Image (cartoon, rainbow, N blue to C red):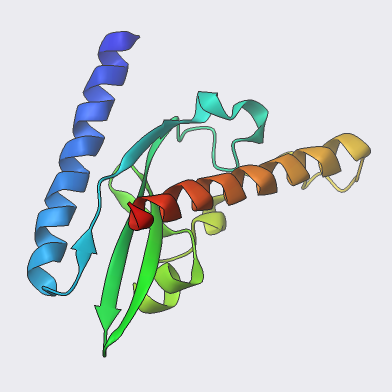
Length: 139
């Protein structure tokens, strides 16, 4: 299991590194920060994304366009990168990560306290992930 985790970490790290190199060449006013590897298992049932996404990389880039700088917070699964905040969506042109949230437990037509509690926990996890990504821009 550790070997698989190590290989996945290396793949994600290499992808993030290559993205950093490419994006630095696009706009010299951009400041690329390091990525933060996270595991779904750290969040348990409150992990707000599809079960197939066991690992992700949180990142933040202070992107400057037309003299305005905004923190672009992202989450990356494999090679697909998604927006965690409005700046990443509108300023960075990325789709929102919550477009891929697993709603399997909420779509069977019945609403229970357990399902509502799970949804609340998933929203808290999303907020935590956004806060962790934005902290990278503040470093």
